[in-house]
Amino acid sequence: MEYGFLSLLPPILAIIIAIITKQTIISLFIGVWLGATIINSWNPLVGFTYTITDTMIPSIADPWNASLLLLVTTTGGFVNILRTTGAAQAFAEAATKKINTRRKAQNFVWGSTYSIPWEVRWLPCPPSAVTAHLLQD
Image 1 (cartoon, rainbow, N blue to C red):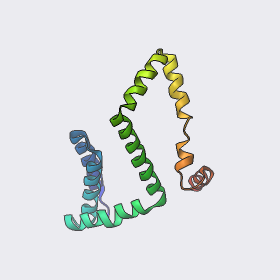
Image 2 (tube, rainbow, N blue to C red; image 1 turned 30 degrees about the vertical axis):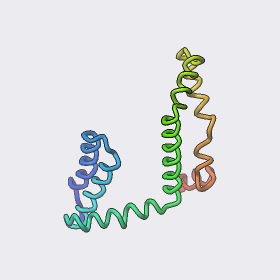
Image 3 (cartoon, rainbow, N blue to C red; image 1 turned 45 degrees about the horizontal axis):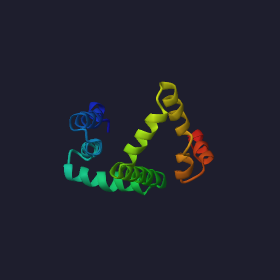
Image 4 (cartoon, rainbow, N blue to C red; image 1 turned 120 degrees about the horizontal axis):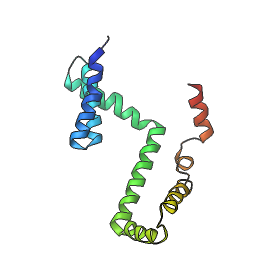
């Protein structure tokens, strides 16, 4: 079945809700739910069930997505610990004493991007396998 204009409704609704409420996760969920409801003959209960069982659970169970969720959760927890303990403020104060020009700030940001190889540490498989898989598609 061709959905035509109806296929644009879920992303448009998700974007509008995200802009109004500033809640991206809830907005994305509502967009996916609306899409599942449209696909399932406008039945909201079947759309909700489809969203959970056929979309969310398989996505979370995927090893790549699970490792990404772990990375985001761990990083968010670490940032929260830094903010709560005041370490972020102390680092900012110490950094502003040494990094006091635009050039130093730019060099610091450039250097810090290479200081922690996140992608190598958190990938479920080596980067060469990931690029090989992407090149096959």
